[in-house]
Image (tube, rainbow, N blue to C red; front, side):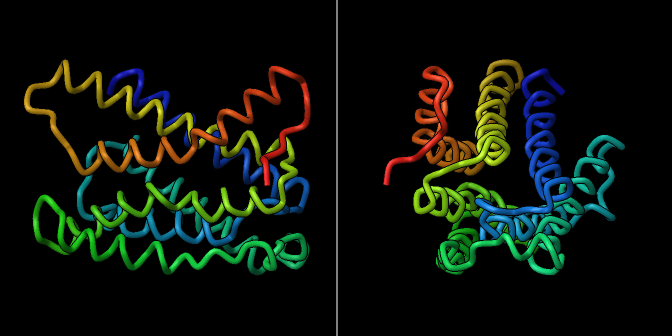
Length: 215
């Protein structure tokens, strides 16, 4: 494992911890899209079907369990916790995420490296992760005002994917025959979706003003 992969994993983990901190300590999920969290839960469920059959390393298995457990717990908190669920703005979080799930599934059935159930589901998870942030970005666009923890959560998610791109570049030049077009293109699309948010985040940081997205 190279430093970019490790940094990417740790940044991804930090994003989840920031979100759990917001939900658990403040007892609020204001500004968080349940639709995006449900998509992430689906991403991890379909990606880690091999968790109990294919052992790679203790680190790998631990990270899989952490991301699976955290994503499911976040969804549970937002839907069922008697206090947290009151802060969920379902009137603004109206993105029809089935419009992301179905095309990604169809695309995975058409474009994959090997036509097996696990491989198709893994490919589906890669496509879905690339666009899972869209309901969250739409929600932020509608509400405009973004609190610090929500902003940091999204920033860390974007940084995680950016670090993974550096990981792929590093491996391309250091490992023979390292070519994964499906992962690369999906990762690039995912990173580009964060570009607008990154711009306004760093503008607010530079000017020491509250982060707001344009309507």
